[in-house]
Image (tube, rainbow, N blue to C red; front, side, top):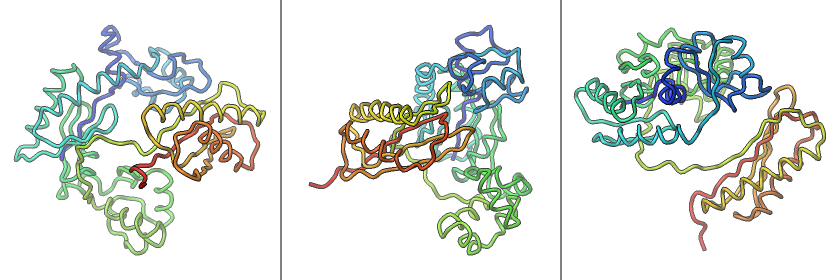
Length: 342
């Protein structure tokens, strides 16, 4: 399996449009205003990353760390168009292609020379788009995904069961795909801090700590095992959401209700336009300073009705017992994935 990862994708697209920026620290985020209170970095060029600028960092902080950076607004249509050209190039191969967002894809290839295929992938992507990509090679998706991280930028790297512990054995557990900081802390409480230690853990003990599905799965990840296939069918989203971060905190709960109602109506219109049917509505609230909570409401019956979706969102909001100042609100609808029986 191969994992194709576009290098500094969003920044690279911007640099293609503005060649004079090549070699400069480029930061893309929000409307491009580094003084915006709550805008964050979407991506940064490698030159900006050398100054500690990374995705999710507040633009204000990015400007302090790299005052010479060029700040640009997000242009989603341009990135989508570039991504479509990349994926079209990947589909010219005799392979199953699974698209993962704008800048990533997995390919399942039957070949005795995966490195040769990887280099041809890089050549075709470059010829079609002028963009560079890194290709990770593995016996499964987990290995291929992690291998790409070792190949950056614009390289090819192979990771297999035979080399797994040589490369990753002494790395912290959160170096693994799918294991974040919270899970790493829970594992550390069990005296499991390295990939090698996780691989040697007792699945039954982790099942008791994390649940019967997640616990043993963590041990498999530690061993570099993954049986998930590369799927070529188009991805069908299970949900859709809208959220907004306010430049000034909302102190009045009536203002919060009005904003949730607005988000719900806008989201309902998008969902209806796609012909999707909603069965559950969730509301996310981020209080000051940064505590985030979610409440949800299952609809009495699946619907496309905007008034029903708005009503469910407000009922979910009413399940919050806190009334502190709010900095972010979000509404998400979960879809019915198959037609309801008559």
